[in-house]
Image (cartoon, rainbow, N blue to C red; front, side):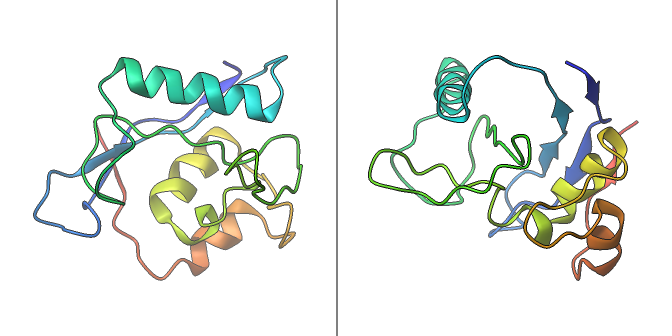
Length: 131
């Protein structure tokens, strides 16, 4: 790991009556390809009890996402659902707040905007640092 954020709490979505989500960002260095990294992250999720069948956006034990991978822009295809950069990260303060902490100055590969500018324009601001 090359950098990481603090833990952040954010209201559960789509049902805010569910337990709050806990979010963080880590910057890592890896020799894995983006697809191999995705497979590794999904194996870690499974090890923590994550089951991928069922309710979309429902409560889950763990959700590990790749936000950016060396600025690569990739659309999903028949072999993999992986989209880079993460298609909604720039709209979510629970991603942007810890991302700004772990990778200040990061620039979105598609929009060219900094994480700080994206966070400032984010319409929903419910993420709060824990501790």
